[in-house]
Each structure stands twice: as structure tokens, then as C-alpha cells.
Image (cartoon, rainbow, N blue to C red; front, side):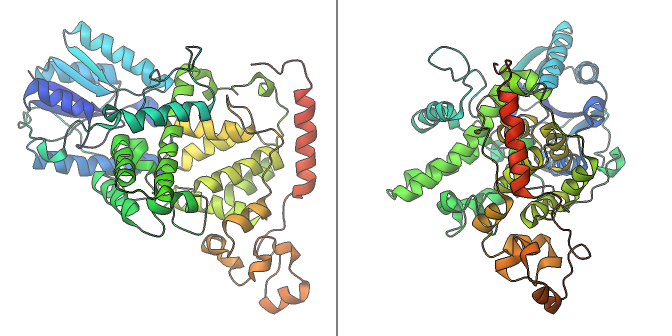
Length: 490
């Protein structure tokens, strides 16, 4: 029996449940297909970094498929129509895919399933994209979790004590495929530019092989990798994170492979600190599952705040401030360095994401949804569930928000997490000559010292667009007034 393997967010051969299922059912007669969906490509929050990452990962995957005896079929159009057409052309009687949990994906997959079943094709939707499916964990009351700490406790207990949660489904080296009928038509894999996306960033290398290299490097590094993750993960001046976010988002790496790496390191050591580091990284994988579960059970969060308190929040319309934030010209070096990293690399450190989000929502009182959308447009790892959850957490509108009065001080954050200014100097070369004492607050630099260094604020670097202390008081006044209104109920 010929099986179609429909790829979406699982661009890999290793540890892929949909592929493993198709292989078992068809004895290698698998037709791998990727459908270019015009509705996704036309979405306003889809950016060049993500499209480039996907297309180049597909290019590598096609090469690896050819080494296994097959090739990737690429079609463009409405997925249900294209998959029905491919089933008829190939004689396939089985369609396998890994589930996606975002609202559009669920609607699309229902349409595809109905259309293929009407053709007499058996459809198998596999749980592969997360470690814990959105319905896998329930609170004591029987409903989905809305608080991360309780979710993480249950999630970690399962992962640590039930090997099936991180079991490997297949090995890339064991994938052997029958040749694809040369009569099956395929589009060439397009570049991002050919799809209308002009990449301006230098992003993390795409593809399954790059993902495996990054994972190995992260788990083997002594001073800055997984072994010291709990110490370094918030430091902006140290490469203390895995840089695997884009690979997990697009499925060039299995989340189970990431978890297994941490579990293996944890099992080999009696060092309590090392075990803590491994559990801290596992907790980041739990965040990913948690936010996806929140979106799955509350799809409306992509359109409006989770908490009713914020449904009519009086955000400011401030286009000049918005533009300064976008372009890294706010006058706060840690904010500007982070935004320039995003614009240059399609990536931003998670601590930096919290800093810039707090600045936009609290200091500038600009709607978090503008920042949320901009991040999706720029990030190679743009994941709707995680991105929405993070932004709503900072804004205070999520199911498990930070306290409304928590407003990050950008100067304090910079001095804490980039104490020697390594991160700022990397992305703000115009401030490279400043002494460390003034790097996080250039406006405090004495005029005589500025003249000696040849630095002029406003000419070389903007003055702050807002006074943080005054902006903090303004935000607190607005938040308190909003909380006093009678709609402060979910």
C-alpha cells in the first residue's frame, strides 16, 4: 500500500512519527509531499526568515530523501485539493501527517481528512510536534492547566518517570524508501525570494543536520552549554542557550530528541547542580507545550487577551514611539541592541524578549499585539502559541500573567544581564567606546567625557524617547484604573 507522508512542521527523517507510521504500513512505498499553502504565504504575520528557513530545510530534506531512494514532491495550492490529486495520481490509500494545534491548521486538517476519506484514503494524524499533547495533562478539577508552575510539575514528573514520552520512533539511518514514480509531477523547491520574501537577516543555519550539530554542541559545551544552562540562560553576553528554537518550531529537530539529551546527561551524573541545569532546560520545553495547550483550549487568545481586564485596555496610538522601538532607536541601549539583533538575525534571546516586550507594553503603553505580530514577521522561530503566550505574560493579560506592577527597568536589566556591555557593543557599535559605567545609560555621560570620546547624543545615538520612571508611574496609574473597573473577571 502506497502511503503519502504530508510534511508541515516536521522537516526531518529522524524520530518522526508520521514517517515511521507510513513506513510500517507501506514497506517503504512512501510519497513525501510538501504543499505550499497560499493562505499561509499570504498571512500578514509570515516573514522572510521563516519562509527561508522552511525552503532551505526542504532543500536539504529532498537531498536526504534522494539518498534514501525517493524524492520530495512539492505542490502549491489548497491542501485538500492538492492531496486528493496526489492520492489519485499515486494510488495511495493512506495519508499520514503529524498534528498541528493552531486554529487554522486544525481547520485545514479537518478539511483534508474529510476530503481524503471521501476518496477512500485512510488518514492517520500523529502526535509528534510536542512532548505532551494538548489534552495529555489535566488539572485536579479535570480541566486544562492555566498556570505554568502546576503544569510543569505534572509535565516533568511524566517525562522523568515514563520513558514512552520521549521514546524514539525511527532512526534516519533506517529509512529506506522505494523510488517515486517519475510521472508524479513536482514543483521545484522555491527560494524565499521566488515566493516574494526578501530576506534581510542572517539566520541560524536551517535543516536537520544543522539541528543535530547544534544539539550536540549545546550538550557538550562545558562552560556555556546545557551543563551551565541554569546559570547562563539569562545572560545576554554569553552564548548560554541552545539556539534550537527555529529547529523545534519547524521540526528539523524532534522535541523528544531535545528532552532525551537532557535526560541522558542528567542520568549520568550525581551532581545536583548539573541535574538542576538539565531540569531547567526541560522546563523550557514544558513552556512550549504549555502555551500550545493554552492556545488549543482557548484559540481566541490569538485575537484578543485571555483576561477580560485587557479587552478594552486603553493602549496608546504612538506611531513615532512604535517606529523607534521597531528600529532599535529608543535611547535605551539594551532595548535597542535586542531589537537590532532581531532585525539582523531573525532571533532574540528570551531575556531580551521580555525586556523589549515590557518596554513596549508598559513604558510606551502600545498594544502588545503589535509587538506580537512584529516578532512573528521577523523571527525564524516564530511560533504563534509560544509568541502569544510570552507577549500576553509580559502584558499581564495571559492565563498565568506576571504581576501587573512588574515593569522591567531597562537600565537595571541591562546592567544585570549584560554587565560588561558585550551584547550592547555587538549590536550598537556607535556606543562601543563608552565606559561600562555609562553604557546602559549614555545620557548620564558627563559632557566633557562625551567630547573626549567624540560622542554626541542625538547625532550618534538618540536620547531616551521616554523617561522610564515617569513611564512606569503612568503605566501603573492606567493599570490600577483598569483593574478598578467591574469587568476584572475572565
